[in-house]
Image (cartoon, rainbow, N blue to C red; front, side):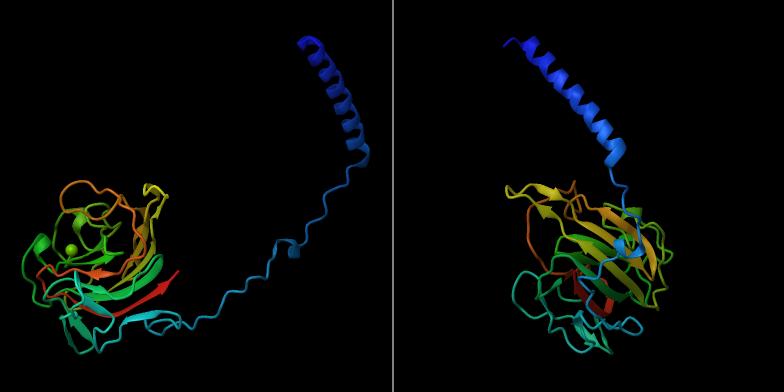
Length: 254
Ligand code: MG
């Protein structure tokens, strides 16, 4: 059979097919059913119940990372030693090295309250510097950014050296600040290369400062970030030599 015979033969069948189909269509195709409200409703699964916290208290399904009394959920970073930051009046204050949670996390919602030192000392990165390292790698900057100019992607609410905060929502050093952080962990392929970057949303005192930004990789002080595959990891707090205080820390795994 020649190619041209086959194609003519196929064309003839196709034409007949279309014609028959067209006629059948015109006569028999049932009209789509009329939509009613129930057609776009689903009932399962039902969202489980969570009791919200009053005045920023932990919701019922949160893991409390600081209860105002002790640092039992934390340890010194880079070892198994105790976290030695001073706990006083329901808060704890930076000192004696970085600390890290004993538990590890993937995707989460994190609530952290922090206060820059009441005594205003130093300038730029030297004033009230600390940091919250998501999965021990990605820093949401903590800094006294109340009347304290520094590089924009290094001020409070920045993803350090990657994204500036959209606005400066900083409270005075004598007042507390609140961070609510929504974090999606990066995903990696089997060969260790990046499948999807980490994503972060940050509200600073209820004001959106990071809107679901794609992180470029782990925080680097010098040079460009580069992802390395990792799994669940802890939350770490930075000792930058300034007595920043923290209180009321809780996390919800997502
Ligand atoms: Mg810092």
